[in-house]
Amino acid sequence: MGTGSHSVVQLENEHFRVTEWTIEPGGSIPMHRHDYEYVVVPMVTGRMHAENSDGTEFVAELTQGVSYTRSAGQEHTISNRYSDENIVFVEIERL
Image 1 (tube, rainbow, N blue to C red):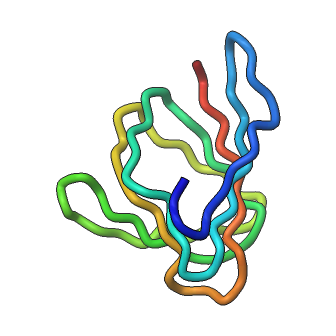
Image 2: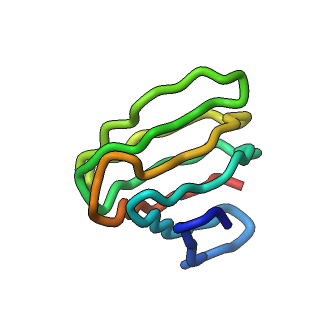
């Protein structure tokens, strides 16, 4: 885990892994690679800062309950730079 982040696996079977992530203010999830296609379900409205492995950066705008998907192979660091509240989301990986 990164500094100021933690996760709880809610469900894992032969098809899916469902993980709830919390990133505290100023916290981050360190550089990691997504080996599976995944869906993110934001539990809050807010902004996450992402830095890709190639050094490019972007801001992910989160809207509570509005899901988005990403393809396998994503490599990035995610941080909570913009809020004094926790960023919480559920990640659903298709195994």
